[in-house]
Image (tube, rainbow, N blue to C red; front, side, top):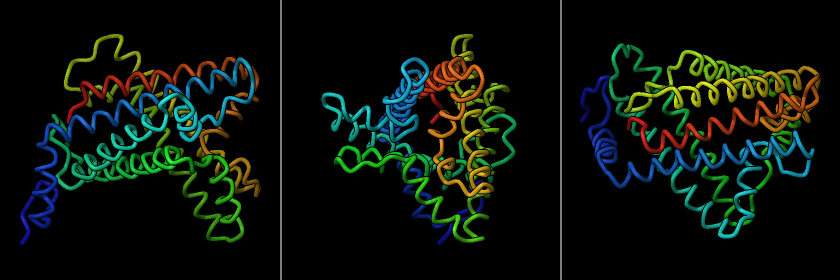
Length: 277
């Protein structure tokens, strides 16, 4: 049997399971841990980028895998990684429930299909990071940069592979552009259940715009790498950051990027407490 929801019909059991999950206080709290975990990882990425600016290489990859490796190297790192993985899985499941049920209505919200698609995409991202965190906790984590370069090299061997890489690059650049828009327009404030003051707004704008610029750069590098048949440039965030450091005034650009990514991390902590869920 199916029931009608704001986004259409779906099996009653699926909708009911999602509804029960989002009504669980324990599940909500664990999902909020996912936002906090994201905050920690972004702060660590900001730290790694700052090290690139001040002391050069040796601080790890400037991406999620570098942050996970740094976290895992600390005392009690494996435990922290498992906690992060659990929180990120819970947050991913929350987004799945949101994709099933539709986001809670907001004033002027007339794009339920887009909201569902975005929630599903965020679920995939959180599951992927949780999987990486679990692998690092078990001692089998791998560098995102190396994996991306290896996969890109394989895809570049065929025409369809190149088309796929270009499509991925466009997609990542589009996500980056959306982050910039979301930050500059202050749309992120709609995510919070409290009014954002000047400090929260400044942190959110800085974080979203900075992360968006870095993501857009990573996407453009994937396209450039495909055109030039150079998989070493298609390593994701790490490549974008290191390319930024090679530009004129690269040190200052890296410092700005580090501050921006760290600001996104701080905003993630704000979301862990005040996000609408």
